[in-house]
Amino acid sequence: MTPKYIFVTGGVTSSLGKGIIAASLAKLLQARGYTVTIQKLDPYINVDPGTLNPYEHGECYVTEDGAETDLDLGHYERFLNTPTSQANNVTTGRIYQHVINKEREGAFLGKTVQVIPHITDEIKRRIKLLGETGNYEIIITEIGGTVGDIESLPYVESVRQLLWELKDEDALVVHLTLLPYLSSTHELKTKPTQHSVKLLLESGVQPDILVCRTEHAISKEMRKKIALFCNVDVNSVIEALDVPTIYDVPLMMLKEKLDKTVLSKLKLSAKNDPDLESWKSFLTRHKNPKHEVRIGLIGKYIELPDAYKSIIEAFIHAGAFNEARVRVQYIHSELIADDNVAQKLGDLDGILVAPGFGDRGIEGKITAIKYARENDVPFFGICLGMQMAVIEFARNVIGWKDAHSTEMNSKTKHAVIDLMQGQKNITKKGGTMRLGSYVCELSKGSKAYAAYEKSKINERHRHRFEFNNNYIKDFVENGMQITGVNPDTKLAEIVEIKSHPYFIGVQFHPEYKSTVLNPHPLFVKFVKAAVQFSQS
Ligand code: GLN
Image (cartoon, rainbow, N blue to C red; front, top):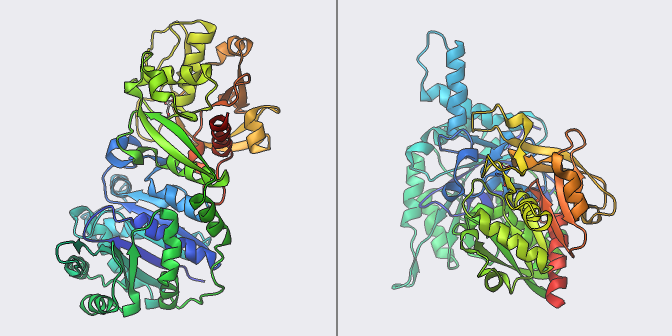
């Protein structure tokens, strides 16, 4: 079958949740038996978000094939339970880079290279790439930004061209807008929605379906009014109320028949009713916890929780699995010191030290790890968090007071964390870390092995530094084990302290692979250990 294309645009304001609406629609279509994937087009000029500070754009999400991408791809994977790839996230920077490289190669000799057609052709090629794999019946493309932004124009123009090229039943546009509520007059206002549809129309795009974010239910009359003014069917005005969790959105969209409306416009059969049993049972467990645990997330970007999006979602998945509400306490590593650590961390049932780069807040992380180790508090260190656990152990158990990572101190005598060999000659920053999925072999009898219940795993990475294998013997003799190793390079992927109830550090990022239907085993076991700790 020729693939069908759904474009999701946003109007009125940013942060309305286009990614969640796209992922929810995809979930419903998938639950009806269709193969679906979602792609995000980002209008900024960075080639990928890998070089962006998390304060700017939230977490950088990493795919199996090692693409550094927008955090919305994390939502797509968590909802659909299928991996995404480089092709699922394209930025303006990447589009221009490709076109300019081709220009230098002489591909356009004699021609003036322009936004239309050269940039729009490249955008269209990227959109159609996923359809051409033959793996998907439906491709949902989310256009980042808000309609009317200068940066979004080439994308909207590309959508216009594709709508013109494709048959009517092969493509449609879902436009997400906001109905603001005026509390003084108790009314929802439709004008901003009308205006954002007008903006789309100025670019030659008529949306087929409007999804309206609203704090209050939309009356029948108001739906009719929106339909009339915006040129859509009444049943194509979809209400998207605020809900307690993003995981409620697919069920809300099902109630509003978003999936059925989409299928009928694309002339696809509704097939079976969507199979959402396991989704619903996850929601029941999430909403009816039997336990409650407090887990400290120690990081330096805690003012913006989006910087740790996948970790927070992984806790929701693992919490539901354990029938536990996980209360994540965001704790700034810069504020932790020897004289306040007990007071700051004393009421936690688990401590997670987050990934990161550079030396800001490092000593606070090490102090928090020492506290977890000495007080038997369940500990989970991810990437930089694992590296800091190694440094803490070297300093306070082995006794090398100057132990450090060469990322923070290139002159230390005990460089227990050091730059990977393959990184030593790299000078460019973009896309040059050890990225994506690598295999790891687990030692039988370890906590990691007990969690995964197998000896060969694949996990995603994003780092330049590694455990220095010259010191293995000293660590093992003192009680820190290396329980996960890359079989090809011998790179240490997991460290554990056997005598501790739950102390695991991982060089990879397990949070990227946790989904609603497959909560990550290491998060599941960590939350379980926290529940036990809270009861002890
Ligand atoms: N800065 C560390 C490294 O590059 C850890 C990276 C991370 O936490 N993602 O190895």
